[in-house]
Image 1: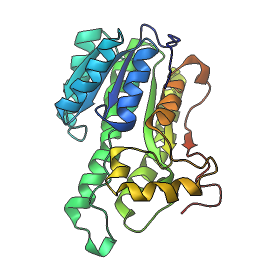
Image 2: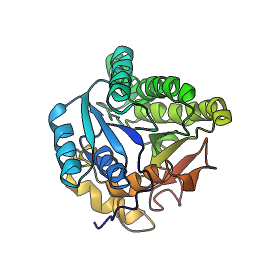
Image 3: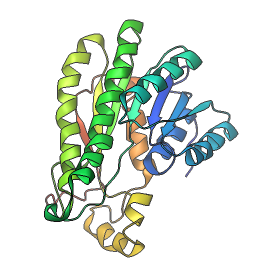
Length: 258
């Protein structure tokens, strides 16, 4: 995919969680193409290093931080390391997420539920708070974006924990947008539809054609489709958008959530 730089985010610093694969990797590379220095966060260092290599090869600047976003100390440390390296923070894309073991609620255990909520909801909550504690005194007009999902308002069998975690993010940003709005800091979600990521392909490639057939655009999303909207929400073009959960699904849910 040809994505020439337009430098809409030149001179800024962006933290991207879950930056080793899928949407996070695509977003990190997109932020870099737009001129941002990017902090790549995730639990596995090897995929992050691959993303960093791609950014460096394109002339961009990236730093790798291996961290679990559900751990408050780890989050505070990664924010501190970002400020030490770059001097400030402008944008945070809270993308790290897991699907968990899934399955009907009667087959799930407490540990599985806790893990999904910890990564998908507590993680963005911790990251947002830590970033705002830096952004607010800096006076810089930053932005916060989270990856949510069409499953925040829909569900399939086995998504009781995942859907709950994403609905929680949708609710969270409405409150945070009111808190950060007077300071000129927008807070939004990108609610992805069905996207061709390692998480989807874990179900087998055979699931992709029937899912694509349900969408108005007759395809599943690409990580770059979600990344483009996340980056746009951090540009001046989206300066009057806040508290919104923006559905990016290729028309998958037009006939109704399912």
